[in-house]
Amino acid sequence: MQNKFRGVMQSPVTPLKDDFSLDLPTFERLIDFHVRAGAPAISWPHHKGESLNLTIDERKLFAEAAVKVVAGRVPVTIHVSALAVEDTMALARHAQDIGADGILAITPYFWTPTLDAIEAYFIRLCRSIDLPVLSYNSPSYLNGVEITGDVMARLIDTLPNFVGVKEASFNSEKFLEISRAALALRPNFAMLTGVEFLLPSVPLGGVGSYSAAGSICPNLCNELFDTCVAGEWGRAKELQYKMTRLWHLFKDQYPSSLKGGMVIMGRPVGPTRAPLPTATPERQAYIRAQLEDLGILESEPHGW
Amino acid sequence: MPFSPGLVHTPLTPFAANGSIDFDLFAKAIDFHLRHGAEALAVQMHAGESVSLTDAEKRRLIAFAVEQAGKRAPIIAHVSDAGTGIAASLATHAQAAGASAIVATTPYYWTPPPAMVLEHFFQIGAAVDIPFFVLNAPDDMAGGKINADLALKLIARLPNFAGVVDASLDWQFMIELMTDAGRARPDFRLFGGTELLVSAAAVGATGLFSALAVVAPRLVRGLFDLCRDSKFFEARPQQEGIAALRQILKPGGVAALKAAARTMGRDCGNPRPPLLPLDPAAERKLAAQIAASPSLAAEPRGW
Image 1: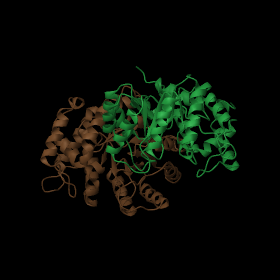
Image 2: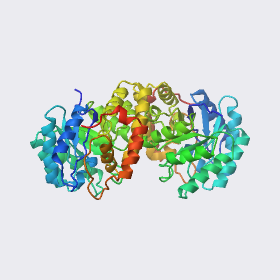
Image 3: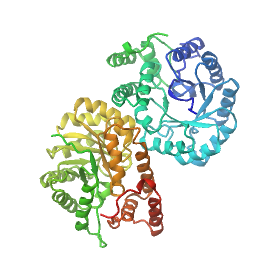
Image 4: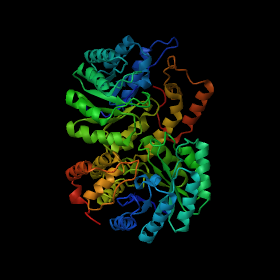
């Protein structure tokens, strides 16, 4: 059975009003936009959704809105990673209560936990709910902390609802060591990459990614995935190069730059909460020039 | 000045019991590599214990390899050193000795500012007319690495800067490099610096530097051919087979590689100090793992 977490899944940003409070109507419009623009799944709030700058109550409120607006059209996963593991546990239970289709959780922040501690953490989290759980590996942002292939294999062995990983090392060896270990035990385990690095990952068993730039270029996301899965390698390389130029553009001051770019695409979503900066008009002008150069303004939807 | 070979083997340095280089065995190794899929040889990379060789030994090995390979295959001389002048001088010697290209990584030990890393590479590349490749190997170099910006600056200054050998395995770096450098110099080449080739080839690598070829030349050749033909899905079994071998050998480094070569009937002695050979129990375990590996069953034994 194919895993339902597949393709370039969209993780919306979090729209804010000028006073930095949550903008619920725009969030609902954004979620609906992603679904209409072909997102195979929705997941919120990733780091680009400013997850760690939202209160737990705010996260619950928008999680409910996301599930409600998507209304079963595609799967919805809730990113439950929080500084305090107890908050993560509460967000996971909440996700189950509101009818989400799964959760996503990163290795715990700050403490640089050992492999044993990481394993214990995922066992506790997975056993606390019935929903499918996707893990999230991001060694370069978390001081080298990562789930190795061995630990991944033990978790798969132990936990029926441990169904995939967002593998965000962007490294051939790390991705392959996990995919070798995981797919041998659970052939439909979802090997996903973080940013849209599909061309290097699909040949190694990758089945998709979470999106960085999907609020700017949903068409490019879907076309890149389709060409990779079809093995149209020449075209896929062109699209991957283009996608990576966009990542290079947006990773600087991420996700502020993304929100700046969304203004240009006719989908303004307000400022970014501190300590992250908000894209200045000068930065927006630079982004506009880059998007024009890449042909994004012609090939991607404008407005909602 | 195109440099066309794709699959480059990186031979071990055979040492006699007294620690001296065994040139007879080195000749045998060169012949073995050329009969088992190598289109070029890189002499001597880190797997060949370049850092444990004296300058005179490196010069002699390069000249010897050029002579021994003859017209059969080109030799790429690895000239990395801590001092820019020392590396540049070895590069000059390599060209005079008949090497077809040179390769160098970031300086050993020092952590100079970016402008001096650029200068280091510039002086090495400018010392020769033959193609110059930069090796990006952060795991070997305590994190020292290059970025696409440095490559662009080198392209602007060095007409013979021909490509990068990447052992960082970093997708973002490889794609940015090939996007930027590929625009600035259309024949710019990316080589995989390890046998984790599928992802690198998918994003534009057209070559491979292989240290594991001394153990599994058929597997390496099969993987390389599939990648060269853009058969990336089909290459997955070979990729997983070679990745499994890499994981077996990785903790023991060069000592494990030499032990594995010995297991395959291609004894090149032990590594030089400060590296220690594997202890006998570890070597027996390694031999058992290799014997039990189905993907290595078809590999040649002996020279």
